[in-house]
Length: 567
Ligand code: NOJ
Image (cartoon, rainbow, N blue to C red; front, side, top):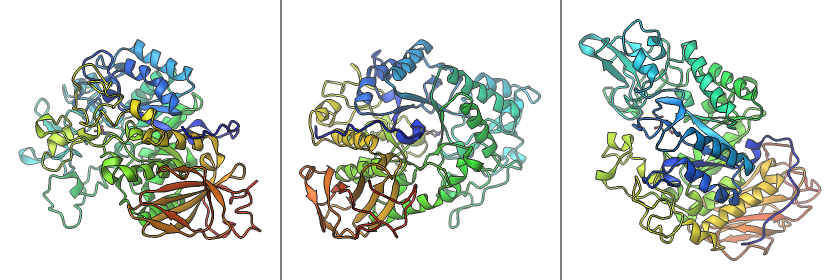
């Protein structure tokens, strides 16, 4: 493995979620230890040394709570119990202590927008109109002939209202009918969910990723959502409407603030929000005086067209929009999306890794991206994802990006000793952790080097971001902190060769990481010729960027900290 950077400990006072790397474990698919074909908590424990080796700081665990699994754990029937499929509460206790023993963090998925329809709260609520839990969910009379109360659609397709004949009313479900939405206008619901958070905080979890945070509060009057211009006003598709009344209501921020306050009373705990909104709306989730979510997930790279000019515009818009003191973050993949290597191809996925780990802000990795896992084609008869089943002709299934982790080339890829709940990638024999750990040029070792550099260089953990140059192929920027070295990142986002002329010919440096083999350790100066799909991180020579130096970045707009100044 190429050189690693063992510099002095980062002495800044930044909280761990600003300097660290978050890794999402989708527990069903990470490691099976009881040979039922589904991953479990003991499996996560078994693989902690691997995550430590990768220098991951924090594990975000997708839901492991009791659930009928209509939406694979995002339909919870007991918020404080572990589903037997994943293990027991003792396994969980062991997991958290093993994580902490390795000086890592563990955050849980909190799903406060909806429960399972099997949750005792909902069972109670649906019993009768005057039940004490009736108002914990969103119940409403329909129109004549049982027409739903309004035109809101489920994200998974069809009306978001389900008629319940027991009481003759409808209940609202933003997702499956098996996932009734809680009524966050009811203070008892606040207390109940804050109690759930307390339960896990008492077990020393390090924070939460809050599921669909922007969905939690709905318009009090339940007004109809407007149709998207040009769509059929009778459409049954969620995306054919502008969800202005069913999501992103101003009252949500009070809830987020209460969650944050609770977390802060337990010390350095992180609050992350899952929020799919444009930047102009997303930034409100930092809250008034930055007392909202620490990290409202920034998903722009998930949907962006993979073009240098687009990516550059996204970064600039985001950097420009962040509130003072709001810490940025970037996400390249998660369990709801197509995998990055499928979206942009394997060679560019290496460039994407370099981008993710050199941008300003906390990076979140999705399991398997570090070895370049790709989506696995799942035959129609094997689809299990409710979104895929709901839209069979739209290729909406999320199964392809949730297949078992590829650990080695043994019969079930080291994931299990039996057939897994989802089929394995056909190429797991070649694409797996064991192979890549020993191949210096592998994707895994690229990730590892990038994480290592990031952790050891203040330029990346707290330095400013200065855009340098963008054209139809190249994206180039500088990362520099007042202390430590200064780096230039040059990415070719196309498969063709490209040329980049640094703004100042005097910029000399040394390539420290290259997405392709061959240039690490070599000096650079003057024009940089890039191969297709090539990305470079160049450590600039001390002196470059001083105000008196012709290579100064002064005058270039910089975000994130004081303008670059070099030792
Ligand atoms: C967002 C989760 O990431 C997704 O997997 C789930 O289906 C929905 N929320 C509903 O909980």
